[in-house]
Each structure stands twice: as C-alpha cells, then as structure tokens.
Amino acid sequence: MRDEFPQAVKEVLAKRVAFRCSNPNCRKLTIGPRTDVTKDINIGVAAHITAASPEGPRYSPSMSPQERKSVDNGIWLCQNCAKLVDSDETRYTIELLRKWKALSEEATLLSVESNEDKKQDEDISVIDSPGSIITKNQIGDNILISPTVDLRPQLHFFESETQIQQDQVTGLYRISCHVS
Ligand SMILES: [Zn+2]
Image 1 (tube, rainbow, N blue to C red):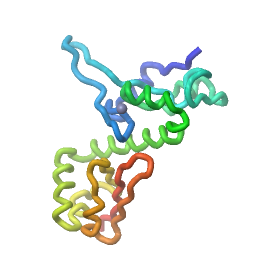
Image 2 (tube, rainbow, N blue to C red):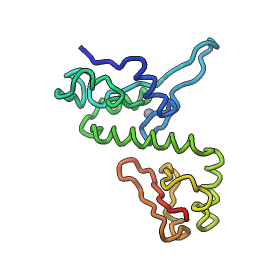
Image 3 (cartoon, rainbow, N blue to C red):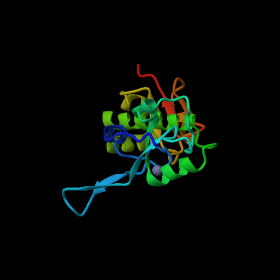
C-alpha cells in the first residue's frame, strides 16, 4: 500500500517552486501548453522525500501514513530528476532533498520579489561596477546565482562586508550583503 499524495498536495508542491524542477542544477520548467487549448502538459512529479511504501528509497518506518503523504514529505522534480533521486538513495539523501527543496523555494520567492530579467542585467553590470550589487539589490541579504555564473574572478569588486560562498552541495553562489 503506497501513501500517495492527494492532488491538493501535488499542486501546492508544484506551485511553491513555480512548476520548476527543484534540483538546483536542473530547474527545468515542467508545465506548458497542450495542443488542446483547454489543457496543459505536465512533465513534473511530486516525488516522495521518504518513500511511499516500504520497498521504496529513503523509506522511514517511523513515519505515519499521514506524514508520508503530507506536503512536508514532498519535493517537486522533473521526471528525469525524480528517477535520478530514486536510483541512488546513498547519494540523494533525505537531507540533500530537503536542502534542494528549501533552496528552490527560496530562489522562487526571490524571483517573485524581483524582476528576473532586470536582475540578470544588473548581475552582469556588477562585474563592471564595483559595489553596485549592494545598492541595486536592496530587497534582500541573500542572492542565489547559478553555478554557470562564476563570480570568483570578480570577488575584489565587492565591498568587505559582502560574503560570497559557494554551496558545497548545489554549487550555487550565495551572496550575503548588508544594505546600509
Ligand atoms: Zn530536473
């Protein structure tokens, strides 16, 4: 007997990450238009962090069925990444999946709070103008940047109270700065 997620749980998991895969190195969009104009195509999966049944990966016998099918035990992934994380539970641990989920939700919230296209332009301008990130991104302390943007050569442009750390697990750069 599998403890499947109710439809409402699947929906909220998908929406909290704007229907993007929660693997920070993937972030694939999982929803789009179907030929039938009244329908959509969904290639995302509400995956279980700890398995829905005893034979599954990361199964936790101490959890109740109710906990197992709750929002807390789910993560939105594309079909590829859902297969990936269930194929190697030693590498894709409960802790790693929880971290992916938290990072993905944080990145989604940052996108909602800012104008993504505009922010990308500003991120590029940071490279040429010392300290500009601090005045231009006044919304927050933490800015997540994909591993494809390597900021290490530009480190000397940032003011001393700004810290840049690369997340060991995800490869994302986390910039912490204080706006005065
Ligand atoms: Zn994916």
